[in-house]
Image (cartoon, rainbow, N blue to C red; front, side):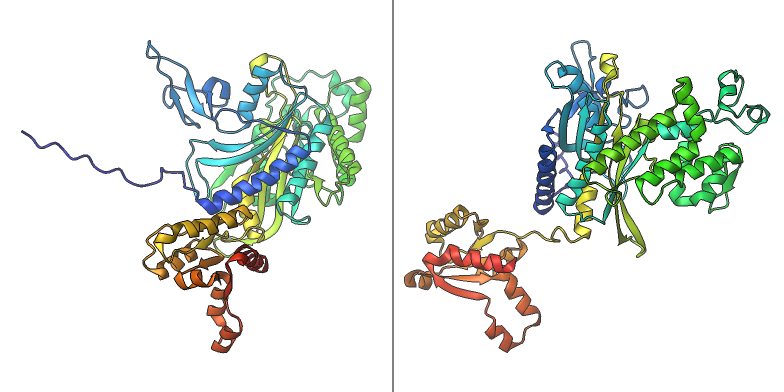
Length: 527
């Protein structure tokens, strides 16, 4: 009889693109989310915890196909009696579930509906350095109002949130733009050819002109190009919008095909930020052509650029009334991230302080949050347009920023450790721990093998414990305990002379009844 094949042991490895989070990181994240939730709650937003799993149909952005049914998401098909069923997927963000929740429960929810949500999301994308397939998001959205007051409120709340978690004023900017303004700049752009050059330039003539067979430029191609502004600068963007340019490798990149005049206008739009919000708005109006804007109003013709400028002006006025100036929230036409997804105002929170990259070069920390108005949120479900606006904070990036600023300790403080000198007196040690815990002090009894006292102190060091409590038989008979300040002891051991070590003892002998008071005193001094 053949010997049964031994089953191989599973490999203890984290799946590709995922990672484990241990106590310190989880505690830091939880504390930061608690502070953020406090700000959101103060602004009147209610918490929402929706399912981590949605139907792929409800998610909408990624649909199953023959070749790869889980493209972009982690998806699977439910199996019923006919071997068919719904496609299900882990949520890839917190906005798509909000659309489903609002459409499903809108008759029971207030309008507008203000909600915040926090939790992990999953994306089936190629992982990279610092880029994982599971990560945390922290969102706040207002659904059901087209008022710019909702957008201004989101920006103000984002500013307050950054300051509450520990990013000081001056180290961040909330930058605001509007997709409609960019639409006005891009409206009717055509390729640089004879027909395009024959277009009339005055507004009344344009109303009576029929433009046919012109090669119109894809706005998304322009968006992708101007998104490279930070990398290649104004000159590089101008080349890419017209005839093209050579990259650093010498390869030639084809241009979009705009005329020099149109391309220059797009670049001027990117550079139209003034010294304050009012100057920026004035620059935008000038760039759009104030006479043309006035003519549009006079003839009652919709102009996306005009409407976008008016919305930005309303937001700026509302923020100014609340005391949020351009030192905190600024109108910035160069914000283009994700514009294709949004229908109106967009916002981005950027941290402006410098850090060093892996090659030792200085660079700004960059964006930690983004959002905007997306008025097609619920339309997929109901067929009716429902206005909405919101923000999403990248939790991991914000935590990294707080560590860079020293707002989060590199290593969290562990519990007070009560050592075990006599295993038959475990009840005494548990009584000590109970007293400390009842006083609000984090504490634990050493539960390993107590035979080697040195190992107990090594354990306390590994736990980053601030204090060790010691009570042997002699201490018990005298009614005292020894309290060892492990933080001070480590500092003395690093640099103190023998005389200094004697003058600054790190171990104290106190009556048993003073245990809690002395531990609290030492902890307060360590802070």
